[in-house]
Length: 457
Image (tube, rainbow, N blue to C red; front, side):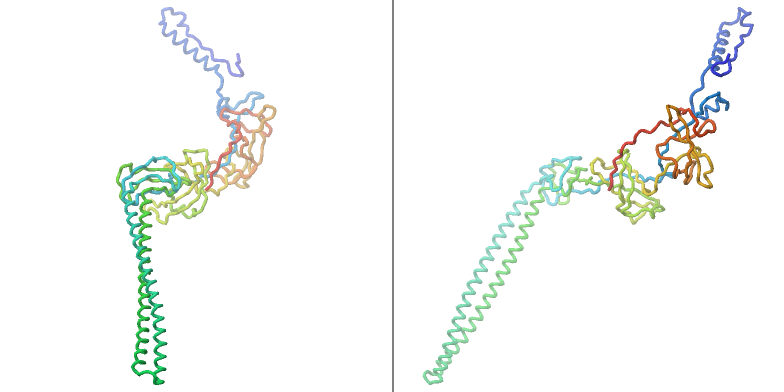
């Protein structure tokens, strides 16, 4: 009897001794029956569905009439023939600012903790400012005294100016009297001594005028000096006000608190650190690159960055800094890459993979086993593309142009589009238009690709 085109199972003969000898051990009989049952089951089993080659080997290369050829089908995808190197780095904030105390004082309040968001100009803590207020009041009182000095000096200038005008009148009168007395003396109306006395008085008045003018100049210099002291004291008052403003610690940037150094109640000295604030509007990634790859990298170059925390995001960063100093032992050069962080989801310390080779075009890459024809000389070959018609799977032979081959794979320059199904291997040579069966190793049809958000720096 033939079961499903297979040879009939081999008959198992039971030795006659098991029948004629009633005294035989029952265990021997039981074992013999189990062995026969196993042989019968193994010969009647069906072939498992595996790859096309495995199915061909099991049938010994003999196909049943009207049987379909089993094929392994793959999906054409774009890829790099030689995957470019990825460099591992960690994410860090674009910048970190330390908020420090600029004056001595006890910390009264600090209502922020790690992870809190702060805005630029926001008051984040308050110091005890009693001593600062007292210093400001003293400086303001001294300024008032300096202004009083200026007022007194200006009054002295006014008095001296009045004395100058009085002296000018006296000089004018003395000169007129002297000229009149000289005329009378020449006419013989008065004695010579009287004329000389009038001349001497005129000269004395002139000298008094010069002294008064000098006094005015001196008083004006005193006013200028007093005004200079006022300016200096105004600077002292401004400095005191500035020191008082230091009692309020203000965030210099918009960011997130990354570290809290002290607590309220502690006495701070000038320079003591209070908080660290990180700017996460952008994120830096520092990687170590071999000196052999340094010539391919330039400042401003676009790079691809992948984060294990967000594997579906494609991030385009930019090289912002190349260190001029390499590690003398490992010959590695530190390179800094900046990536965008518009959503603010990227934190510090995340694993980042940086790929500097972004200009290499990706092409359809298939195994060389899928190519029929000579691909080494004229770079032409043929592939079988799977097409489904009326529920049947058929293969169509198509000519393709081949590119570079490496490691058992070859680039398809034209003739095969991404997403198309092609025959990777078959159990026997195929013909154009032949109907085939898909093995369990065949890839399913691709679904519509989802759009991936790309962030660019």
